Length: 151
Ligand code: FES
Image (cartoon, rainbow, N blue to C red):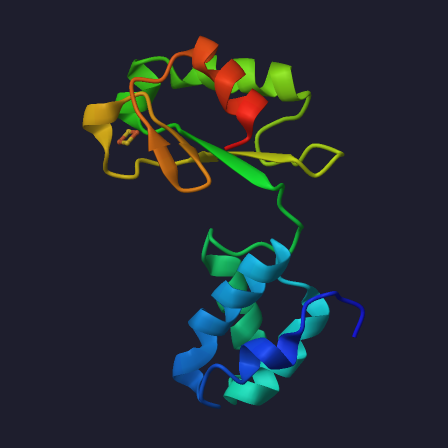
């Protein structure tokens, strides 16, 4: 297999059944920061889920990606409350500093920049999420620390 994850190690953690699908995909995504397409057939066979459905599930959930993500994933909420409080400015500044557009990953693989819809934390608007850590009342200037530490 043309990948550096040990797929067997992941598969054997779960029973060979359909109910294991999401957790297996999560583990592959976590191990490799994306879902290598060549692993999908094996996952389909293991869980007994048709390949077309495995692909559909992997495409549907934003937590999954067929493209490698950066070590640090920065998500900017573009929901109404965050938008009103300047999310667009944060997005523009992040794109400028990273030299990429939202939805892209830096060439060195360090950062992925994404925009998300409201995540239900509007009281913290504007909100930026870095690797699942929430940062509320965010200002464009706060990006410097986020991008410097990558933490
Ligand atoms: S609009 Fe950003 S958390 Fe709700």
